[in-house]
Image (tube, rainbow, N blue to C red):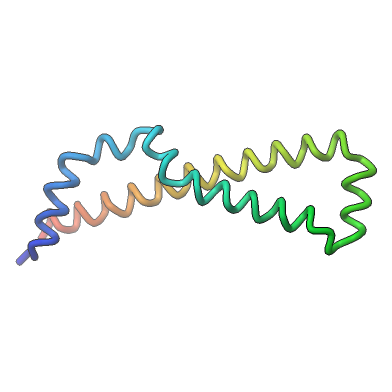
Length: 101
């Protein structure tokens, strides 16, 4: 027997599963987490607690900054795509389990 909450989820997922899979919707799910992760890494890097890393960063600044920027974008994209797909797959699995009951 399904609870009222489970019935509501089934109805919700039947209506919204296609819209939740769109890439614009996926951006809104994982973007804050990805950006906060990159900001935490940047703060840690520029905080100056590891002086040798600071010397290397400022000595070879032009090429290293570009690499760090590309890595930051890659981290954000990975977190956005992974978290959105994971959340969608978890909801889809829950929906299929409830349908099979």
